[in-house]
Image (tube, rainbow, N blue to C red):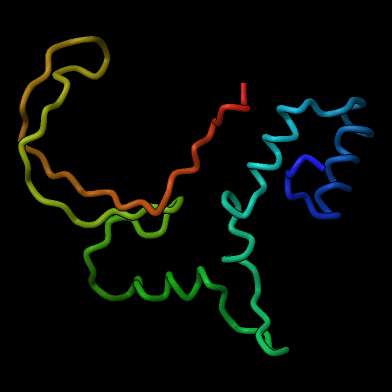
Length: 132
């Protein structure tokens, strides 16, 4: 009705939660929050779910197949792989503008340090405009 994309399981789960456990109706903000938090975009049901093609269940999910392209037992350039839609590759020494202190306001200084580039597929944009 509100375009939240809940299936029957979601509706039963949240109805039970709010009516029996919390004793109230969810607010519009809570409904949109639950819809966003449990969406394909956030949970990756499709990419993490089992695949059945022509009646045959495949042994790997789409995520498993993508991750298999970077075996952990072989040398590679990866620092962080496939963590929260992001990865980091081995970087190099650069001159970076850095705070002189981390515990209080202070001046900035140029330091030589190794920075690893972050590669991201997307952002989740949360909290969103509907979340307080």
